[in-house]
Amino acid sequence: MRITFLGAAGTVTGSKYLLEHRNQHVLIDCGLFQGYKQLRLHNRDPFQLPVSDLNAIVLTHAHLDHSGYLPVLVRNGYRGPVYATPATCELVKILLLDSGRLQEEEAEFANRHGFSKHSPALPLYTEQDAERALKLLRPVELHHKVEIAADMTILLRGAGHILGAATVEVNADGLALVFSGDLGRPDDPLMFAPEPVEQADYLLVESTYGDRQHPGEAPQAQLAEVITRTALRRGITLVPSFAVGRAQLLMYHLYQLKRKRAIPDIPIYLNSPMATDVTLLYQRFRSEHRLSLEECEGMCHVAQFVRTVDDSRELDQQRTPAVIIAASGMATGGRVVHHLKALAPNPINTLLMPGFQAGGTRGAQIVAGAPSVRIHGKDVPIRAEVVPMETLSAHADADEIMQWLRGFKQPPKHTFVVHGEPNASDVLRRRISQELGWSVSVPEYRDSVELSSIDLTASSSR
Image 1 (cartoon, helix red, strand yellow):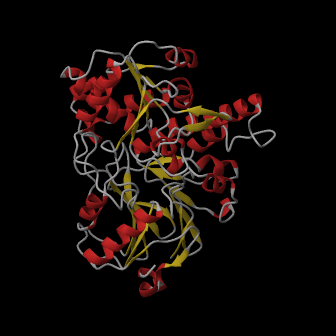
Image 2: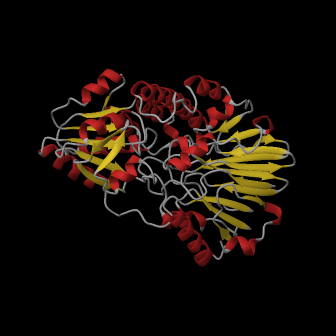
Image 3: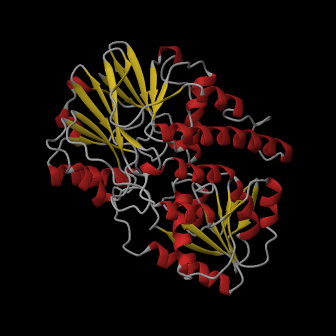
């Protein structure tokens, strides 16, 4: 078996891992690169092999950095199955259609206003491409072994993180290869802890927070303080948020704060049709998260759902205190970008920036203290208060990743540390080597490794 690292190697986005075994080709995750321009340009690179040679695709979960490249492959001729948990399949339907529609809108906007360097600006893929991709989805239940290619099976286990997220175990000729996907937190208020995995010959483990621990501060206390402080100066708290997972966690905490009267009685808006649809899925898949029926209902009704573009524009004219949650989480696109243009220049407002902000994104620039950010070809000043919030992450931190790794009853033959910025991946590599004594390395983009003949000594020193 050979594995090629086509993404999420040296960065946290673009997850794609190509497995080759006896002339079978399987892709684990199919994600978009996001952040720095040099990374985003990889989204337009030719694929590693003719898509007609690709036998199957398996998704660990629905976030676009794990699923968003799928319509590109389908546009280029891929017609094979795409395996994922039932909840992931439902989320992917929402995310990919929204992504295709958004890319078309942004290309049209760029062409209309003339700020693109390309003439004309073209979307990476369209909503129609996304619709064709959705026809290939094949739901797979957790803990059910499924054959996906000749002499190759998969087994999915719960990974926490977001609704439907799974670790993937690939078995071929008695060789077990495990992909962690994105690991959730053991004490997440919404999602169950990642299920333990006891054995693997080879392991790929994420390292988004491989070099740090999440702060111990209670997220509700920080939310209450920021929202109250902003409301007292008659400002608006704008929260860029991922539509899947982060938005629902925010609304859960806001429901609890409203119930305890810990924040002012001001309107809360969820300005993302996609996040609205995702929130409703928590009611459909109630067995897959921790929320009681009452908590799920409360989370789903704490905010006013904003669906139309006209209603979204009206929010920018809001002159009384409010909380606006809008996609996307790193302020790379979507409705939150228009809110930034309207709200960021006013010092009475607050930009509450939850979770990890990948390098090269507007979110990362704002958190780093940039005096302005480029939006639609113009520099928008950042005069609003900026508050990073690291207590809402759905990713396991370094200690929690190590806790999950200690669940293995014996060390894998080799562990690859992926899905992290260079420092995070290398710090986690050192911890795995020193604390567990495992053979471990950090692969680079497009590295290709023959698993049966891997030079463990050389690899562990990288």
